Image (cartoon, rainbow, N blue to C red; front, side, top):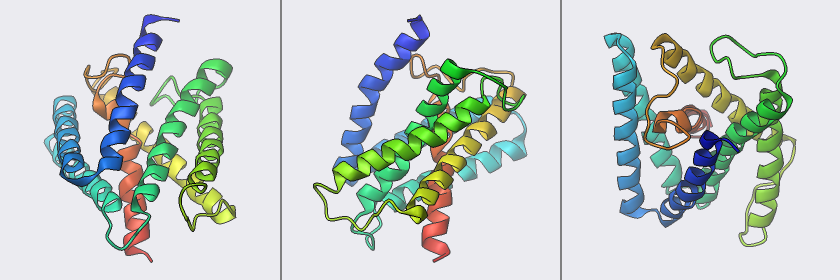
Amino acid sequence: MNNNLLYRLLSTIFILPLCLFLIILGGNIFIFFLIICMSLTIIEWHNMTKNMLIKLCGFLFIIFAFYSTYQIRFDSNNEQGLIFFLIILFTCIFTDLGGYIFGKIFKGPKLTKISPNKTYSGVFGSFFCSILFIHIILFYIKLFYNLNFTFDLKFFSYIFFISFISQAGDLVVSYFKRLSNIKDTGKLIPGHGGILDRIDGMIFAFPVVFILDFYLK
């Protein structure tokens, strides 16, 4: 195991449980956590981009992305807001994880020059892992909660769509990193890079889901 993979694993083991604890806890502590994450993301975006118009548009988008995240977590009209939030979150996480693992194992043709490490096998792995593990997680959650979620074709398509948006967000951030000639947006998280490197898919998935679920009903 190389050092980068070891750092990546150790960081995930420490950070993921902490984030889950804050998400489940909710309240002002989670709001403060969101503000910190948003501020760090804005700083990384500011340092990465030089064009003032692109920089400003990025600031506005990041603010809206975190506002969407807040609204989904604390939606008073959705009694299952936390579960809904976690489904989106874990879809993005397993999308990223599936792409990384399948890409490393199977390699194969490159997806795009925008992100040289992305492969078609990674894309398949992203879809496969997100759908598989959300299905498993949902099964066990339903043992403890009275949920209306059923893993039917509609829900399958929903997870597939979130995974697609998450991968698209990853590519968009990769494009701007490539323009800036940098590998990572920061060095905050050992083995992962900056916070924007880790939430690039999420900051696209949450606002898209927010728009679809709250404005297009």
